[in-house]
Length: 146
Image 1 (cartoon, rainbow, N blue to C red):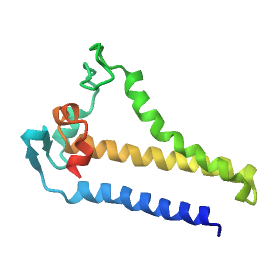
Image 2: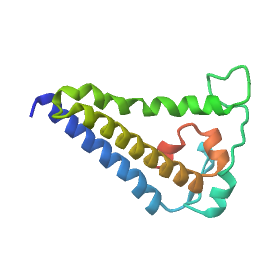
Image 3: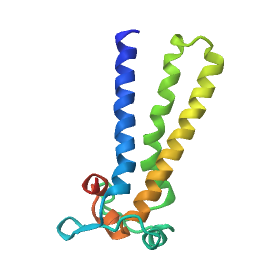
Image 4: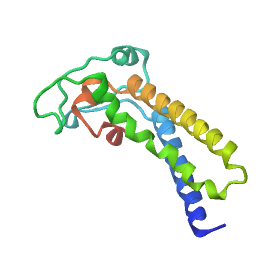
């Protein structure tokens, strides 16, 4: 195995462990509140999920929105889209495959499905565990809750 391929395996293992730790953290963390940092972690509750279920587009408190224009579906999607760009990076390793014409589409679709499921579960866990005001006012909420 080439050094680059070996490094990729190690990085994939680190990413897998990190992702699994997200799910474990949501399952075992007790509810808490830190008013100074605008954090209200309720633990997973259906009431919290219902509060966060539907979009409530407002004026975003981020640096890129100085004009005070309201968020839109497009502006929210533009934050999520770059997170999925790395999926196609596997296609660049086509020289290492026995049958690239079959492996690349299969691998790409598998990566898209895994990413979609993982992100969906994380969004549901966050929506059911963190109140809307905390997510709105604290841009580091995911880091602070973990």
